[in-house]
Image (tube, rainbow, N blue to C red; front, side, top):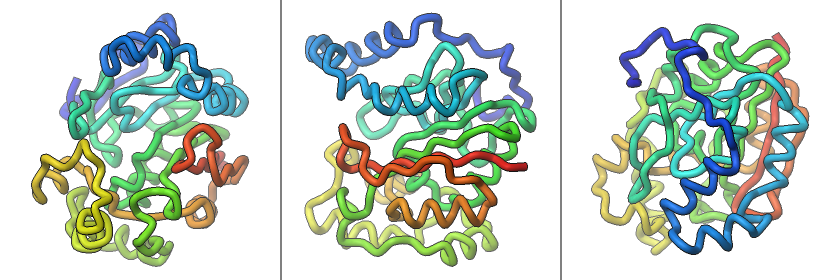
Length: 255
């Protein structure tokens, strides 16, 4: 299915029957024999995050946006989506493809939404989040796992303010907006901090594939953003223990 499919339904999607078998198959494809160790290693399986998803979204159907090469979503009831079939040197395991601000599902389709290290790649986060809220049921949860400014290759950059995000939304900046490229290049690439899997890509490809971090945050800015969008804050973890570069904010749709 492609982004041209504007009226998808949950009944169109083939869910996975065995979540951990699906996880292991994709881990093996990516890591080979190392997958056996990583599958048995609890931190690699990320049981902490899986348990939080189960706690706040223990039933119903979800949507993962930008799943990439692996997922911690319960795949027996989660639609795995992506905007691109590849990320750097890794292929996506998504089954449906569309941009995060153009979701081809009806209003109120999903009980929860999930993504890991995705929102920072989106030039217009408020536009995307409003679209996510459109397809989320009232009372549904959004799980955002994001890179922490102080513990990633963005450590030399400034955090993105809420005012800046509002301005981007009002100006309807496109997904490949170049505004932050120079800042990213000067404070990440020129400092030798560029991720290995993007080093073969040129400027236009990096922008058109949403590979750079347009925005930089800590959990405080995301809490502020959620409150601006009238989401109830239900859980915050400033440092996910098995992945030191990551923080988590969970919000609930009020109305």
